[in-house]
Image 1: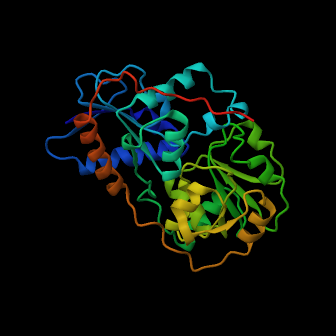
Image 2: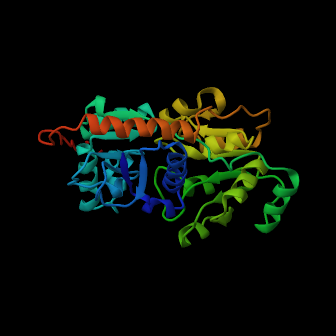
Amino acid sequence: MRIAFDSRATTDTRGIGRYTRCLLEALRATERDEDEIVEAHRPRRAGVYHAPWVPGALVHCSVPQVVTLHDLVPLKRRATYLRYGRSHHLRYMAVARAERVIVPTQVVADDAEAILGIDPERIVVIPEAPAPTMTRRGPEEIAAVRAAHDLPEEYLLWVGGLDHPDPRKRVTELASTPRDLPLVLVGAAKRWAHELPDVLLTDHVSDDELAALYSGARALVLSSDEEGFGLPPVEALACGTPVVACDVPAVREVLGDRATFVAADDLEGLLRTAAASCGPTPEPPPWTWEDAARATWDVYREAVTALRPLSGRMRLRTPRVA
C-alpha cells in the first residue's frame, strides 16, 4: 500500500510539527514490505492520502483520505479566532468528508461528531507520545543549557508556540500573574512575546535543549483553558518533571493522576502550586510513537476497505458563538 503523506508540517515549530515528524519517522520504522510512505501533498499514484494537519486536507481527493484533527478550537471559538478565513473553513469541510479522521483524545472525537457531523465509526482515537529524545538529562547538561540561555537555577517552564497570542493558551495573563519563581517561556517567539513583562524567553530550541530545560525546571505549567491533547506535559513527565495544569477535559483524559490540576480560571493557584512541586514524578503514559504508527497503518487499511461515495457525508454544522 502506497501512502502519500503531507510532510509540509514537519517544519512547524509547534506541537503539530512534532506530531508530524515523530509519526512519519515511526511510520517508516513500522511499515511492512508491501507498504511505502511517500512525502507528498497530492495523492498521485497513491492508495491513501494522509493530511496530518487541517491545512493539508483536500476538499476533492481522488483516493481515500485520512486527516488528523488535533482540535476544533477555531470553530468552537470563531469570535476569538478571526484570523482564520474562508479557506480554513473549507479545510474543515474537507475533514468532514475524509474517509477516516484521526484524533488524539476522545474529547476531540466528541467535538468532531458534534461540530462537524462526522459519523463516530469514521473517527479513530490515536494518542500522541513523547519523542524518543525526551529523556531526563544530567546536571552538567542542565547547567549548560541554563548558561546558554542565561536562566536561573530555579524556574517554572511553559512550552508552546509564541508566534501569535493564542487566546486559549493565556500566555499574556500568565505572564502578568504574581509568582514566586521566574517563568521561562520556550518556543519560537514573535515581537509581542518579547514585550511580555517579567518573563524569560529562549525562543526556538533543539530537542536536546528542550529535554534539558524540562529536566531542570521545578515544574511545567500548562495554562490553557482548552487543549486537544497537550503534548508538553507528556514530554515533561518523560524528562522527570512535575506537571501542573489547568483542569481541562483533554489533559485530564491524557494524564489522569499523573499531573496536579487546578481550576481553569486560577492562574495564580497554578503558579503557586507549581512552585511548591516536588518529586517523585510519575512516569508518562506508556503509549509510544511506534504504537501510534501501527494504529495509523490500521487506519490506512480501514480507509481503503471502507471507501464509499462522498454524497451526503458532509454535514458541517456551525457552532453557536456567544
